[in-house]
Image (tube, rainbow, N blue to C red):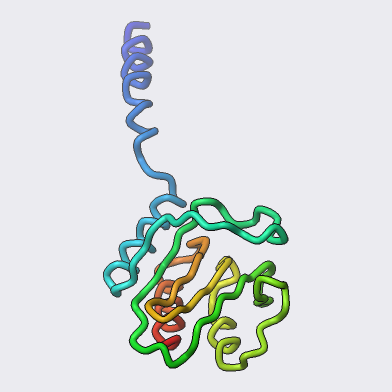
Length: 145
């Protein structure tokens, strides 16, 4: 009987330590963020004002991945993805620029917003998937020069 009591006390004392261990999802996000940093992408949890028609799909703040733009020859653009594979502007008009659309089509289905201006290219993304998706995101952001 004494063994069971001691074992119970030890388990009660060790249970909070198990809470400190990150979940599988948290570990996956951390791996994605570390790989992005290693590849030269900046990451921050950025607040954004989402269009009302996004219906609260994206979190606030949302993970934003960005990189500096080497040249502004590609022009400025901003598109949202309300459903996988469908990229629209703020007025919900589909993206008609074939070059930009070809790049956006390569992004994961949980990307919510992609934007380019004179200084940087950014992606608001749900971070689902493994480290290989980061390479895909970097490829798209790098080609948006």
